[in-house]
Image (cartoon, rainbow, N blue to C red):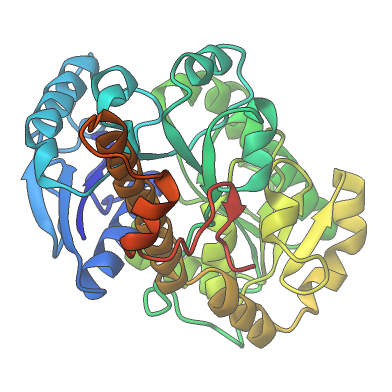
Length: 385
């Protein structure tokens, strides 16, 4: 298949530092190439890929201090994708709904993965107004606020098993907090859990401009306490060591997390996850097997010894079974093929209906033409979990 992957421009693909969406786009793109598909990646010029790269900006927008407004760059990218859209069987967007107006008329070849939260009031009208645009959710919980949207499938994220190798006997003797400093990510709660348990906490996290005041006023004063170490933003190479040597990952979120990539990154290292039961958490973490799913800080502190006793080898096994990049790519390929089958069937039906010179019943037409089997019915969970 000829597949276009259209990535956000905020980070390179893969990102040099933080950037979960761009990382997933990279993993998916590389696996599709390995499967023999003709893949084109629309992304920033500093992206690295084995697919064909169409550079849409010179470098990732987040790391360019001269960029104040990202919208013009996205408009230019979407225009480029539109002008080349006839070259592709599938157009797979990772931009939420920004492209909907420009690609409505070719919606039969368009899929959109929703990477963000969907519980905000302003999300609902767009999916009603563009109900022909097929969506991929990254967890079933992500669908709940927009349950009537046109979902084609739920496909869980996946990671290459070679990037994050298991550490069965960690030496770090610390808990890890990894991600972004923001109130909804729970950095203050993570510190309180670690302090109550008497276990050191290492925090590797980026600070967005919007959260700088929160960090200064609420988080920074807590970093002087014994056993609390703030490392800052780390790259992919540092992540393997950081997560692998940790005794456990703290994920005390307070928002409807759409997926939570860091949870499966920890699992890939064999590191158990202690997560608050919000959003997708109960879908990703198997309580008592790959981590613990708790309701509160008090429960987290009480159950922490159990977390540290979980079998890291079994955690890695569950990662390989449920969250590999290969599984993610295969799920997408099945969905792509199902979409193309539906498009070809629609074209044939339209041709039949418009041909006044032919007096053939619909069932005769379709039975005479062999269409590929629909391997992923629209609306199913493709996660394999």
